[in-house]
Image (cartoon, rainbow, N blue to C red; front, side, top):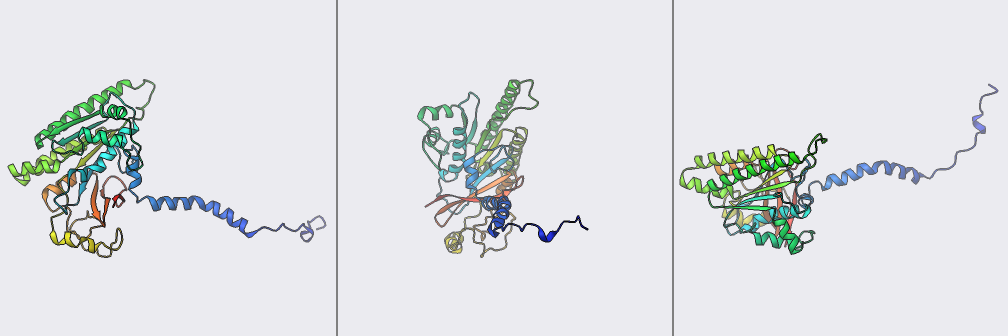
Length: 340
């Protein structure tokens, strides 16, 4: 016991400030706090459309899926510019981010009357600054447009034929890229994304329905949508398909249109007045619409879309929301595209 240390004669411990211990604790909690902030911003769709087309599975606008843009059918006087502006922004943002190339970077199949993707419109968009994106010089913009192939159509058979031509072109691009791959590479290097935009399949299908019947229209639309889905899966590493629907979702209900501002007058996304819905897919901002897909045509169209985005007006702002995402986790994300 004589050799045992005398605990009572030990040097006293130096005083430690309590706040120094808190700082250490806070530093260990910072990652969780940072993750919490990130999680709180995950709902914001604005970050996704700024990044544009991505190869990541976590991105909303990505390769390997069929994206669909639709508007809410509350008014009949909405121009093509209304539904075409966001897909056009995603396209031009993509064109700005890649160097000029002899390889096609985008294919656009559209009715001849659809002006949102006209060459002059695309040129002006590339030259102008919008949503924090700088504009290009005229020469640079024209070089980007050289890689965009426009395929105007006037009927559903024309659109189906155009999709077949794009399929052949994509096959040739795939073969060319495989030949350019170095023998030492175990797998293909990161591929530059290609965008395929198909405009107005819903409206073109109505022409088939008028000439025949709804069942015939649904049949030809289903076959074409399956072709697009197959293309998105075969070329999943670099192809992004965007459907721009011009007909609109929902029904033309004058009473709903008259009272929608009053029913949603509190805050964005107010769910206090939600009512039971017939369909599982609905808008979080317009919950009093009984069904977004009241017809066979609309239901068939939605079945061919992996990620469905809805554009609508609410209290003077244009709202974009993800109403369906069957292959990802983006359901419920939304953003304000334009606020007056």
